Length: 159
Image (tube, rainbow, N blue to C red):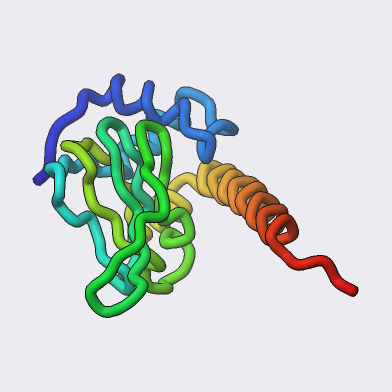
């Protein structure tokens, strides 16, 4: 279900997202034109594990549960994401399938940036695209450092 969010409110939301911290207000205004807004109801699946990934999702309101399939019929909850969090950042770059399922915990409004819209943005506003790619690299670097730290904390001592 598509919904409307006025352009100013959308820009106010986007400017606070870590991925876009290097963009100024004028660039945020341009970026907003490439994004879509949807609403999903509590219990509705946004996407399933292994689905085609072609957009990054930002939570404007509500909450989403991230679930990992353990067996054919059993999902294990990984985390709950709320306002300002994103999921699927790599999908604007690669074409890998989703690594988890996402289900709305409560009614939610989401801001989506599709891969093809991101490609148009790069083609039409190259400097904005470069700033977003740098922000994505920073975000992935932080996530990798956190993951490496957790892995090291859980490894058995050698010897």
